[in-house]
Image (cartoon, rainbow, N blue to C red; front, side, top):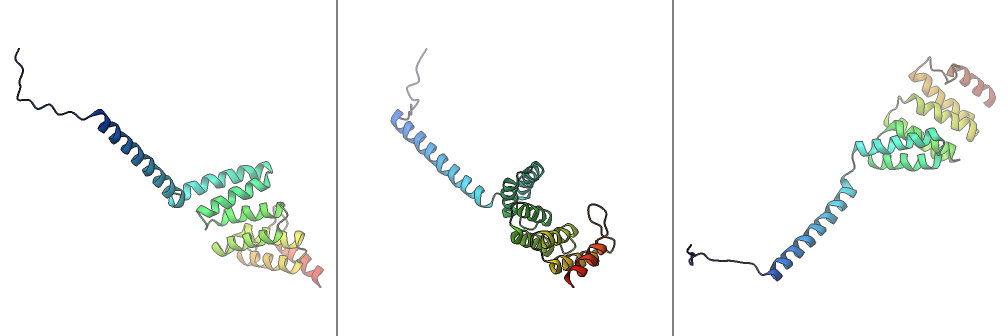
Length: 171
């Protein structure tokens, strides 16, 4: 067997290879940090918001009001224009003793969706029971009746009857 002496043998020194491997590792690490940073700022989408909403709903149902508030706020940070989440957040603000914030949350839901009946009804509840503002409650219910003349409370009472009762109490 003869050796071909014309074959060039090119090798990379071990130290050079270690330096290249180290530089690749550093480049990958920095690239990963940039990717994660970018994802934290702009990588949220409606699906992420939905996950936070579902978590908020679970806390809501479990009576864990403060945690529900946190989850709903995170959902709205990602996707601001969800009137249902604003309404649920308003309910949780009420249950955590923050009626003014509840009214603002309901108003935001109504701003996004002017025909959001649940937000209008819950707004009237906060005005009536927490802020003892019968005129504010009656006004929210009048707006609800404009949308749905046959609107009823969750227990079946016509909203029109509640308005009459509130108007009688403000006279």
